[in-house]
Image 1 (cartoon, one colour):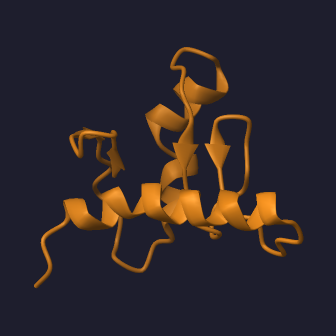
Image 2 (cartoon, rainbow, N blue to C red):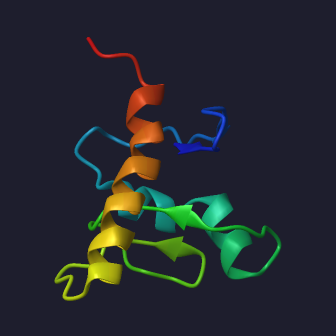
Length: 89
């Protein structure tokens, strides 16, 4: 699922088994192709299971500087919007 800054779902991919990795589903999605072709603009945040692209920012695996740590912290806080968009059961 892709959620915007107001916690509205703007894209959902269905039809995959629960064992499918999120990055595989995203790579096969129409929205990924639209980002790759420049048909859709913006920046997406993904977890470390995704490959970094010009439109998909992931956490730094080995932060070294204060700026790196600040980036990872900001990334985590912002990406948590997606997690909060799903009800906990």
